[in-house]
Image 1 (cartoon, rainbow over the protein chains, first blue to last red):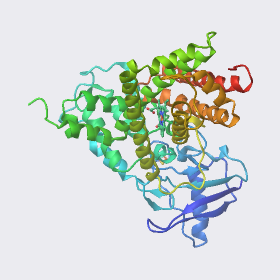
Image 2: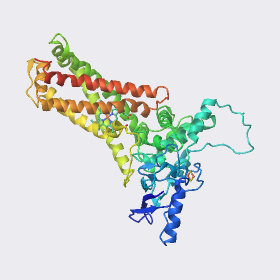
Image 3: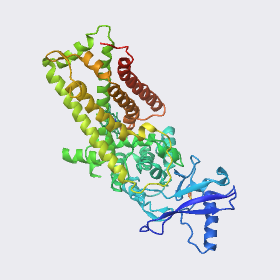
Image 4: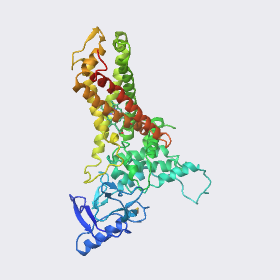
Length: 254
Length: 234
Ligand code: HEM
Ligand code: FES
C-alpha cells in the first residue's frame, strides 16, 4: 500500500524547520511504523537526500526511545502502543500521516523527529531512586509487600519515560511521568523513607525544567503506551501536599 | 534536632511556587465559590415561593444593618477567594502556554473533555458576568432599582423587570451554561488536585459533579425563562 507522509524536517536546534511531503509507495502491512520509516530512509539515501532522523532502540515497546506525533496523537492512533509496536495494518492505502516531534519547551528538538529528553533524567536524578547500602543480595521475602501494593507499584513502574504524556498534554505537563515514578517507589516499603522528599524534589525539578502544570484533562492517560492512569497524579498531589503541610521541614530542604 | 527551622513565609512561598501548590489554592478557593453558588441558588429559588414577599424578606434579612458585619465578612472572604483563584489560574495559564512555545501543525483532542479545555475561558466570562450581575441587581447601575424602604430592596420587582429584557436574560442564561461547564470540571478536578482519587469513587464524583452543575444551571436559568415566558409576573 501507499502512504503519504508529511514529516517535520529540521536540520538542528537552530534551524527553523518545516513540514516536507514524502510518498512511500511500497508499504507492507506487516511492517512496523518504524520499518516503514526505514524504507523511506533507504529511498532517501539512494536519492542522495538526508534521511529522516528518528529515535528508536528496542523496537519492542519497552525502552521508551521511539515516538512521534502521528496525525496529532502521540505514538499514533492505537491506544496502549508505542510507535515501534504500531503496525501498518492499522492504516489504509493512501492514508496521509503528519509526523511531528514531541513539542515542549523542556524537550528541545535535536533533529527532525528527535528531541532531547534529558529533562526527564534530571527529574529522576532529583528523587527517582531509593538510597540503600548495596551489598550482598537481601532475602527476597525479608520485607513483605501487600499484593495489591506490589501490583499498583508495578503498574506505575511500567512507565518507560517516552515523553508521550508531555507531548500530548495541551500544557506540556510532565505530571503523568512524574507521578508514575513517585507512585512506583512510594507504594513500596523500600520507598517510604524518602517518600515525601522525593515528591517535593521531583516536582520542584520538573517545575525548573519548565514543564507545564496539570489541568486534569486526561490526554496523557489516553496516549500512554503503558496505560498509566490519572490516579497516580492524585497520589503525587497527595504526597506533595502532605509533605508540605504536615512535614517537619526536611522535605522543604530537599 | 528533629525539625529544621524554616520561616513560615518561605514555607508558603515554596508551597505556592509549585504548580501543585497553586492547584491546591484553586481547589480550596473553588470549594468556597461553589459553596457560595449553591447558597445563592437557594436564595434565588425563593422567588417561586407561594408567598410573593418571601424573597424580599430574605433580601431584607441580608441587608439588615444588624447583619452588616457578617455580610461584609462573607463578602470579604469571597472576594479574597476570587482574587486568589484568578491569580493562580492566570499564573498557571501563563506557565502552561510558555511550556509549549511552538505548537503542532496537527493536534487531536483526546478525550474531548470540552469543559476541562475551556476552564480558562468559562472562568473569566463567568467572572465578567458576576461583575455585571452585581452592577445590575446589587448596585443598580444597569437599571434603576426599586426599594420598599431603607435597606429593603424590592428584589421581586427588580428581578422581573430586569429579566423582561431579553438581552439581559440571554446574558444570564449564557453565563449559567458556562458556569455549568466550569463547575462540572471544577467539582471533580478539585478532588484530583487535592490528591483524592479512587477507581471506585472517582467515576461517581464525576457523575455527581455533572448532576450538581446541571442543577445549578437549570435552577438559575429557570428564573429568566419563567419571566420571559410570562410564568413569573410581578
Ligand atoms: C472569575 C474568574 C475565574 C477564572 C479565571 C477561573 C479559572 C479557572 C481555571 C483556569 C481553573 C483550573 C482548571 C483546572 O486546572 O483543572 C479553575 C478551576 C476551578 N474553578 Fe474557576 N475560574 C473562575 C471563576 C470560578 C467561579 C465563579 C467558580 C465557582 C463558582 C469556580 C470554581 C472552580 C473550581 C471548583 C475549580 C477546581 C479547582 C481545581 O481544579 O482543583 N471558578 N478555574
Ligand atoms: S523503540 Fe523501544 S519502545 Fe519503541
